[in-house]
Amino acid sequence: MKEKYYFISKFDTNNIDKQDNKTTIVYRNYLSKKIDETLVFKIKMYCKKKNVKFYLSNNVKLAIKLGLDGAYLPSFNKKMNHLSYSYKKGFEIIGSAHNLREIRIKELQNVNYIFLSSIFKKNKNYLGIYKFKQLSNCTNKQVVALGGISKKNIKKLKIFKIKYFAGISFFE
Image 1 (cartoon, rainbow, N blue to C red):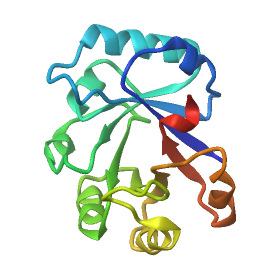
Image 2 (tube, rainbow, N blue to C red):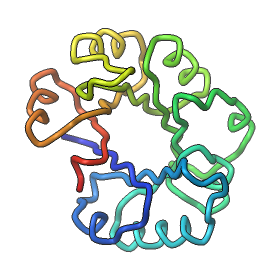
Image 3 (cartoon, one colour):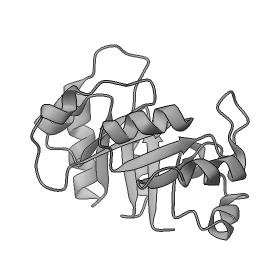
């Protein structure tokens, strides 16, 4: 696998320590309305020390302000105001989608990678591998598999030539 994305909702150095430098940490905390800038900065500094990329979910402006590696736009974020921001070279915007309409929105938001969900987890957004492949062929953007990826089914990604994946429980 080339690139892995690990979604965290709390700062746990033990889990970050287990990751290699091909893993990007994405901090998303949807439980709290206000983002704790001090905590985000602390995570940034720890990731930098570990040579791991760090992205912030749903707040491009703060990610730029704190000098992070990028920002993640969830599927429910359909705003375009980040397109007027200027940011450093190498800063990336990534975002998730569950269907073709949301893929088109992420393309308009000019994301670098589109996270398609859910590939394995049987929830309301369940795609399965074949629908995932079908949707990934509808965009020229790099596509990342998301949802229900485990040590047991990781080999299926290689079989279907899926290079990138993201998750939570896989990394813990």
